[in-house]
Length: 469
Ligand code: BGP
Image (cartoon, rainbow, N blue to C red; front, side, top):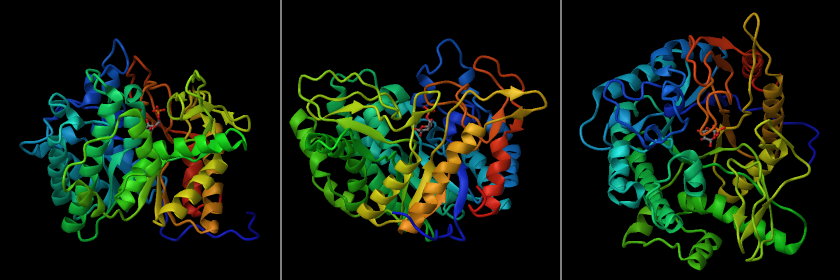
């Protein structure tokens, strides 16, 4: 739909950006922090330098000052569960509480709204050793952790996100580094883990409303529209299949407290259905998210798949996804360009996704990740010419404005990432930030912070409330 006049971004729009603890903080075993599953998985073979990441733990004041200089209204970061409870449960680590108190207070001092992700891939390793999410005790551990967060930070933190990209941990856990490699029947086990994470999330949402009077809480999956490769009816069915397994399974449960029927029939067909214990569905129904936070990088395109299909085509999806025989198979989209890391770029798909989410759930939406990973180059005179990133972000913000004009209730835009950090599985050279962190894959250098061109551009976007793009 073309609009003659576009609506403006709301006055209190949450302009900001995102990071996650294990990707930015470093200090992975400092001040009583315990190891997480990510700390224990070998992301970059032959070095532990990735664990220093951007050393935000020791640079947080300087980093927040830079975010404030850009005029950030909000900053989305995650709390490392193992800083609060080294082993996932037990005694609270006061030094961990102190670090996040300092961080939150520093943000508030600069009028930046803290948006907290409670769990971003970094499950405590001690819990993993006891079965991780396969063990129902992890649900209680998460509830206990959530309670500690709400009690300690709930007086200042208004926006809470439960679990980052639960759907990607289930679908692509081996790439992220969260998959327990000892699992015998991983897919079946993963859907059991998924059920347990859903319960943990539901309990945390209920607890947030009970403990934090001004608290708002929501899930934070990675959501993207799924396109059929053609108008062939079988391709349309395949797109619905994939969207149900990838998107709606997670959000139908978070919002309506029910299993998506197509996803459930897929699990039945494959023998993956989890055991639902007495009382589970009641817990799931009684949780009410206040908004949906979601990460969007690109769309997916899929085609019909026969049972004997070989699904080897890669997409520009979060990770390479080849499809599921008899359900869907991945296809590339000839209308889209790709980043230098092969991810498809689809700003219009962002508007599609926003509209779909709005129609389906009728809740406020908060964009918590969107961005372009690239090999930025530090040039003489401390210049980083990342015009490709500006172009990417500009096009997505334009589509956000169109979606708002379409009637979507978008409350904030927090792209990935505020400053450079370690990528989920592609090291430090894949950069996303507005601020360059001076380090290489294997050389920590001086970790100096340098403003990129996009830094100055985003500053003007925020000060004009999205008018000057
Ligand atoms: C999302 C994760 C982030 C981040 C981002 C970019 O899935 O939530 O943690 O890493 O993707 O992905 P990558 O680092 O693989 O380029």
